[in-house]
Amino acid sequence: MTIHTAMLLAAGLGTRMRPITDHTPKPLVKVGGKSLIDYTLDQLAAAKVPKAVVNVHHLAPLLVNHLKHRAAPAVSISDETAALLDTGGGVVKALPLLGGAPFFVFNCDAIIADGKTPMIDQLTSAWDDKALDVLMLVHPRATAYGFDGAGDFFVENGVMRRRGAAKEAPYVYAGAYILHPRALAGETPTPFSMNRIWDRAIAASRMRAVIHDGAWYHVGTPEAVTDTDALLARV
Image: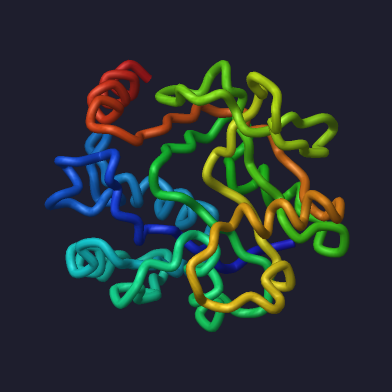
């Protein structure tokens, strides 16, 4: 199945990235000589995904001005300057721009480097429109650059389970997934976390995982910017 639209979550305050984000929205922070948001937009352009929707809030004019110069994909803005809606509410608000077909959702705080198979192809080739409402890209915690958490999920043959009370889990959410709009039925554009949708989909056996086979860099702090710059310089 071909997916024609992507949503990029770019409205957050980037508090852990301060003081950089006092004057630069986190998606525009440069790492390896490129703004974080452009890594994903360039991958979408390479995969010929024609449309991207980007939500904005913090320092929105800077982000809007940056995006208006892109030719591909074509970018539409979902304006959250009046109020932040968190990950779930932000996607719900953007649904009129996203349409009724499945779409990608991306964070803007990670660089998802392609491995043997382009990351976008990994997701689309594993998508099952009848069986799934969510298909998430996860990355092995052992090779997750810049990530110091305990991990998010256990995965076996694509089936996902939250870390729960376990001390650690082997996979982390990589900041990318495919979402079918039907998973948001009944939701309103008020602040809520997408975790609610994920938990519902996992419980209904309508969410699966794809294990990313490239490098993955989490860029969440000023120190991570410096560290990732150095790592990318050696690639």
